[in-house]
Length: 198
Image 1 (spheres, rainbow, N blue to C red):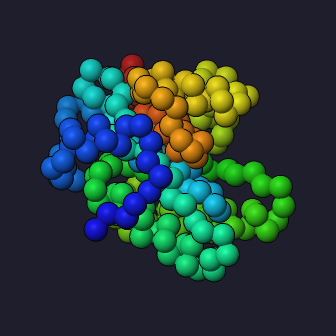
Image 2: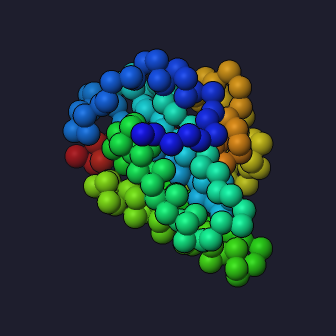
Image 3: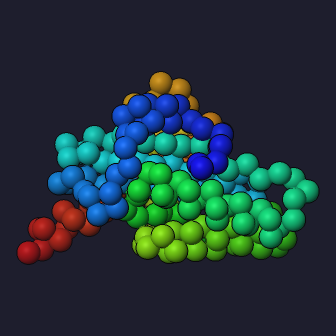
């Protein structure tokens, strides 16, 4: 049973278009499906973005895993692991992308975020998926074209790139979609570079 999440604007469309399970090894020529994860101690955002053969970007699902305040950290981590695993099983991404550096106002918060990040990586690895990591500067540069962009600018560009009718909510979901888009853009750049080098 797939758990309930705070879901964004592309989830219902995704359910209609992709009701059947996609085989893990099935890939359309030139396509890529990426799960972006924005780790947080209260909300962990997720976003599944697919690049089609014509390079169009499509949002397949987005939302956030809400962690109840007052819940023991071990229980929070177990929920994140279980929910991310369920998302991977349902949407069959080919790779997972997360931020490689996080910023926190204090050491306690930093430790919690580090634990969440580790569990997210474990969920991906346990599902046989490679994990790629990008700095906040790289993500903003890839999505907005400016490494110092604020969250609102990133959210607006995510809407434009994915042709979404409304802004993804909560902001953690928008950030997760931005991470997925960053990987797709980076992979495309690397592929072009490798092709030109041959």
